Length: 348
Image 1 (spheres, rainbow, N blue to C red):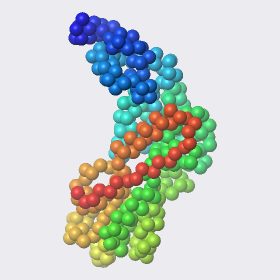
Image 2 (cartoon, rainbow, N blue to C red):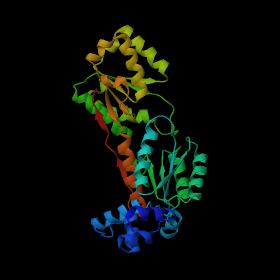
Image 3 (cartoon, rainbow, N blue to C red):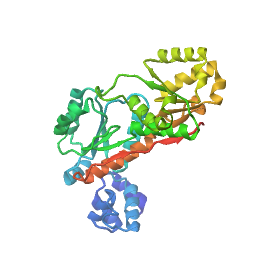
Image 4 (cartoon, rainbow, N blue to C red):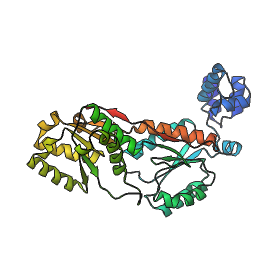
């Protein structure tokens, strides 16, 4: 029987591991090991692995997930519970996380707790009801007050925190302080001595915790301030209107021209600042060195004027998937906080 005819016959019913084993002249356990990603661990030869995978593709094999779940005691689902799916950064990170987990046969179920701890517990309950095998958890409100209760709810569920850190939980993040330090290092390498630091003064999402913007600025000052603390002027911005008003006053007085470097704690501040500067005094950007922190991709036309300390969503998503899979395989292993180094993108 030729392969095409065999494939058509198999398509009339569900293809089983036994069908593939018979065609490949291999045992059913060996076929199972190959199709569940255990070929290397079980020392299946590359030649046989390739043969089995080609046969499975030709016969349009689809695993019986219910049977696999009963056999392995895994649902093959991972939960993702974060505080913010708006904007660009978080959705991009989660998309790359999902892509990596999908390669291992996992479906992801995503929830958003909007910094409401009661909603977080409700979403967590829903995910546990669906027997997820592990959880990615974004920043939680009031972590010092709520972490103990949260850990009680989590029980023995493998968890990896994203974008925040606690010594008792595996974590993957770009530390805000590390991002700020990288921006300071860039300006120092460029010989910048007098800096205007434009920092968001938003209300903290984590109540008593410093804002992300403030943490980035603290990291910046620890590095830049060690050389020239007296040469940093700080604007803590309440709104875009506040930023534009300060900039216009600074341009009118000539004080903006005193700086040879700008630091922006996020993309929004940099975009509004640079648009106004290009409109009113574009020649200033030919001698001033600006740098900002961003998790968005290099898409803005303004990036030709500024260096970016870049939180790469692809790298973060991949590291997050690696840590989550490792935690599922070894739920008792030592916790790890992975501070992913940022990338530096020079002016485009």
